[in-house]
Length: 433
Ligand code: PMP
Figure 1 (cartoon, rainbow, N blue to C red):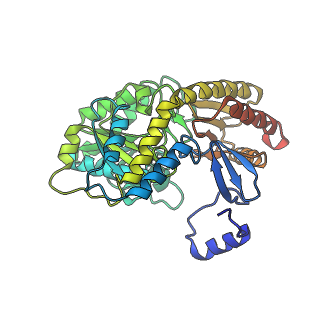
Figure 2 (cartoon, protein in one colour):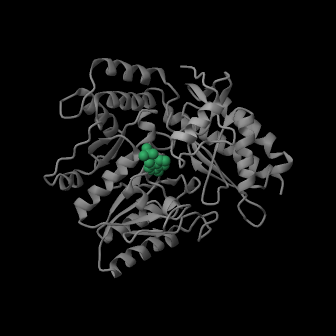
Figure 3 (cartoon, rainbow, N blue to C red):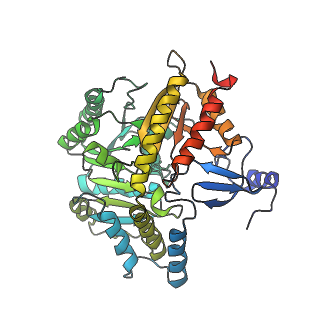
C-alpha cells in the first residue's frame, strides 16, 4: 500500500476515532509510506534523512531482518510453551553481550512490559516496593511504569510522585542542581537522601532505576562515577539496580554494547526494548540467576506473545546484524565525528550551550547567554530541518534539547549533510536572540 488516502481525510478520521492523547509530529503531519536504511519516504516520494528513529536500529526495513521475520512467519508462530530454537538463539545472542552475572532472560513485547516485569521481579526478590528514580526519567506506559516515570507524573496531566516512588534531581552537570563535571558525589548523595526517606517511613528500598544516558531528560550523560556510587548506596540499603537500556542498548553507545558498561557497573536487572526488534515489538529483561529464581516463586509467568518464534528470529537477526556489520564500531566512529563537528558548530553559534552524548545518541542544548532554555528556537530548528528533508526530535524538561539518535548505519556523508543544514539554519534570523 502506498497510501492513497489524502492526509486531510486521515486526520479527519483520526479526530473521530483515535484517542486525543495520541500526538502527531509537526504542525503539518507527514504520511510516511516507505522506509529504507536511514531514510523514510512520504507519499509524494520525498526522501527524509532520519536522525530520530533509534528503533530502526540496523536500518529501516533491513533486508536480513525482514527476511528472518517473513520466513519464520510462514513456518510457525506460537507461544513459548513449545520448544523452539529461536528463543534459545536470541537468548544466546544477548548473553554473549552481557556480563556473566546477567545470565537469565525473559522475553516480552515492549519496553514498558520489560520495566513492568523488572519491577515485579524487584518486589518478588526483595519484598519491597519502594523505587528510587531520576527526575524526568521515563520508563513506559503501564500503570507501574508511569508510577516510576517523573517525566509523566511531574509533567502535563500528571499528579506528582506516588507514595512509593522517590525522585532525586536530574543528574545534569550542565543545567541541573549541581553544575560541574565532578558532581557525581553530590548527585549520589541525593540518591542517599531518598534512601533515607524510605527508611524514615519504616520501609526498605526495592530498587533504583535509571537510564545510562537520560533520554527524555534531554540526552543527559550521567556524571563520571555517579552510577558506581549510587549503586553502592542502593545495594548497601538492600536495593536492586536496574539499568533501563530501552533506548541506549544494543551497540548504540559505540564504546560499549550496553550503556551501563560505560560506567563500569553491573546492574542486577537490565531492560531491553526498542532496537531489539528493529520495529517489530520484541523486548527483554536480563537478570541474575538469583533474582530469576526468587521471581519463580510458584506463580507461572505467562506472556502470550513474549518469546514467540517470529519475534525471536527478528531479535536474533538484529543482534547478529550489529555484530556482523560492526555497527557498534560505526556508531563510535560516526558518533565521534559528529560530536566533534557539533562542538565546532557550538563555537560558531553560542546558542548551542552544550553538546553531549555517546556514539549515535547525542544531544545539543540551546540556551541564551544567561543559560535560559530556548524552546522556541529548538522547535524552529527541528521544523526547518524537516523542510530540508531531515527529521530531528526535541526533548528535555524545557524542550530545548535537539536529539540525534539515527539508525546506527548512519554514514559520514549523512552526518555531513546533517551538519550542513544545521549550520545553514542556525544562521537564520530566528535563531539569533
Ligand atoms: N524506557 C525508556 C527509556 C523509553 O524511552 C521507553 C519508550 N520511549 C520505554 C521504556 C517504554 O518502551 P515502549 O514504548 O516500547 O513500551
